[in-house]
Image (cartoon, rainbow, N blue to C red; front, side):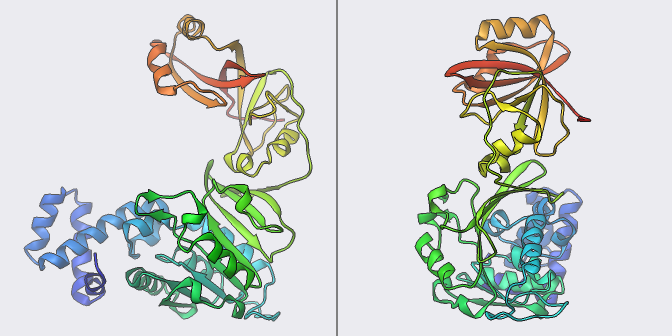
Length: 407
């Protein structure tokens, strides 16, 4: 979809075509039938644009919920856009930080948040959250189509009053005139998604130059960002949504640095306490820390919460004699601990009539799918198999999930 085609969707005729496309897809029409039906009443290019947008809205429901019904998307924009829950969490942190309203310390009043420069704004996922939090936002993106879509999304959700979106190069902006710089550099190149910050667009040195000129900044980055790319004195925060690590953010000018893990939707947060975890034999319970805590190197802090110890100093599995209720880790009751042997593992599972297994691994070179086939499972029972390394030896732990814990 090009810029002209998208602008056509914003006209009365385009909105009518989009409404029709949404209804056709909701009725279950396949792509060929949907295209034929649309072309009977609309030009081919408008029909194609409307069907594409209607399809993207359906995909976006899982991420944007009810807002998706009035928003506009591109495939890449939808993929990179922040989940609203994560964006709202960051916007709330920004609103509560007492940042300057316009680059100098000022009180914006109870209804106002700090002025934000949003570079690489994409389709506007964070822009929407920031304006909903009361922050006036100047948003910039290199792609004219993306800019038009972000502007349309702000209008569709009644947020245009605080959102100004324009086409521009992030490197040429001046973040010094704002309370905070928000940057979401593109992490997709010609060969697909990239995990190298030097291949971001803008590149990491350009992003850091912007940060150096901003009174405060929030940088959205991939969860796997190497620690050496985190600026000295910054806070790195990893965010998990319903047990899945979604992304990381680097904060500057927002207080002391360090490492933080945050769980959503609860909002629970964990920071480094200086805890050191001991190592010891596997006990009755095994705890698997949430991925945000693992990424933030806060496994020792989770171990302290459950009075536990590591099964191996380099593996993020915790064991404890205590059953502790915590959202920071999944808990399993250990039934067997054995050096890894396919033959022995298969025999034990067969003896217990286990036909369904969940296989987890850390520090193991075993091919999970190959193992699943080689086990030749049958029976009506289920189990969790944890493959790990203990003192350089491969082990298999048989477990049952603990669905509740009372401490």
